[in-house]
Image 1: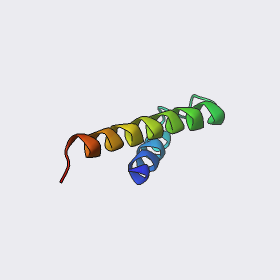
Image 2: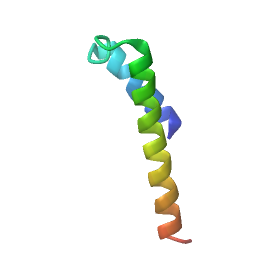
Image 3: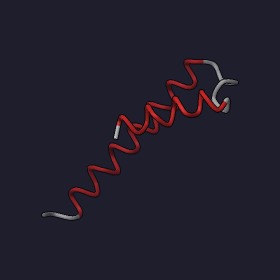
Length: 50
């Protein structure tokens, strides 16, 4: 999942949509998205026991 966040960040930089933001803002946004995805994954695993 962290790989997905990194891939999307790199894609955003390559496409130019993130290129207009300062690097610290981009990194904070990537960290927020990563935490959000991690919380979502943990909640999904707890909601659907195997």
